[in-house]
Length: 135
Image 1 (cartoon, rainbow, N blue to C red):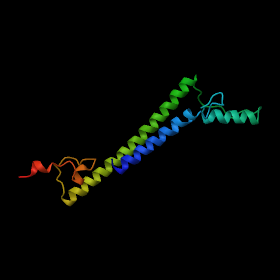
Image 2 (cartoon, rainbow, N blue to C red; image 1 turned 90 degrees about the horizontal axis):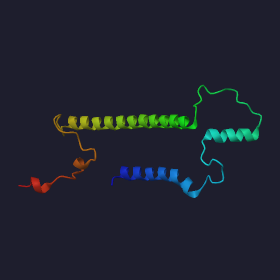
Image 3 (cartoon, rainbow, N blue to C red; image 1 turned 180 degrees about the horizontal axis):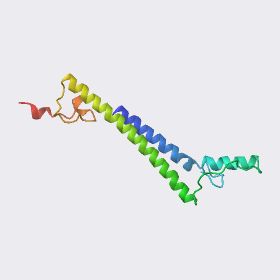
Image 4 (spheres, one colour; image 1 turned 120 degrees about the vertical axis):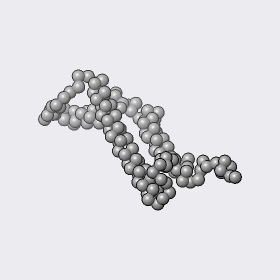
């Protein structure tokens, strides 16, 4: 396993732990609605501090139900994930293109050669069968 794969695995495990540990440890058991959003927490705190508080504006759009609100929030998260995936894919593609162009300049490969192996096995000498090429 490469260094980057280990780092990515550890990051995924950390994210999973952040999502699961509050549920397992029961961190929200003492609340009526244990995992409400920051908006709900802020509204509860303001209402507790100033019971007569009236908001100075109203939202432009209020979803008709909590389910629609959750769906819109999910759509927003999915769009954000798509933008991030596009950005990182574009960066990776550009880097691979630059590596191919540098290899072509150095004369390592010709334009007819297939794309380099993204795992780097070819450049490290792995995966080559020396017995098949021996005379």
